[in-house]
Length: 425
Image (cartoon, rainbow, N blue to C red; front, side):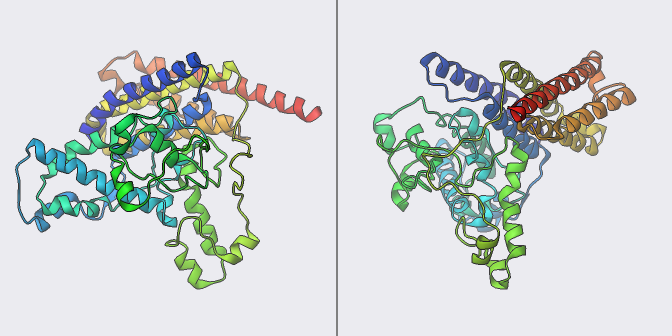
């Protein structure tokens, strides 16, 4: 956990700078693909996903180390060629894991958050799942395990393979010549994120596109078919924590409501989108039929509110960076302190994105959270061991939580007033 946390300390600022650069570049070119509220939602999703990973909140049914120890027919040294083989093995496994998520109802819940943005930009690359509690990924690495690829090689190549999937989530890079036949490019991945019937469920490759060409899932981007992004059952919220469990909740409700016992069981393993016929009739769910004529989800966001969101985003990233940089210290204070801090990060993101949705009681949740944090600091005289670093951290955080509470009150009052004026008109 400590090592991964340190990697994220370096990766997070880099990702943020690239996201900001893309927004600036789009503004300069007159083609801005980054809406502030959508971007904050995406980055909030990335924060919760990385926090979950640092906390180790997932179980591997079979670890790669176990596979190597029990299945390897030979053992090889970690040469440069082995790293190449490991990278290919990871990408092959990634292709099939990705394809499975788009093919089976149950597994889609682990992936829907990544496709939930109705934009396509670098920020949406960070929309990653927190709903994966049981991992089967290692099973797909059996070819590498049979060859005896060392576990440490997978541990090094894994983060590189993951981070290398960030750059192609953009609309600002067109065709890339001969590379289109080898690697996944922005053009390929725009197709993958599109909900156009011609593009749906295509281009599952993560680094190499030749898997799609080999297994019949490749689709070229067409100039005459502009990609429309999102999911066919739109999520209609900025809250990434809600999005992570929406599909699962729908499956649970459908399994409960259907009268057919066979359907109660098979709904989990049927193709993506399948619902029992009696449930479809009684409990219809909105689905986009015409991808060129539907209203994107949006909420009013004045320039002042957007500035507030930027400020909150920076504060969230600083708070989560404190956690990632001090995992060892938090564990020394007691493992429960690490999980309490993790819960705080989740609550911070939840409260902020609920406020972005302008739900009725969002300001109440934000206020309770801020008061609880101030009380914690006053009671302990510090913020999770912060006095070992600087005694200035605690008072600065008290000021931050107070200012946030006042800002939430003022923005909530303004939103309520605007809604009243619209109602009167």
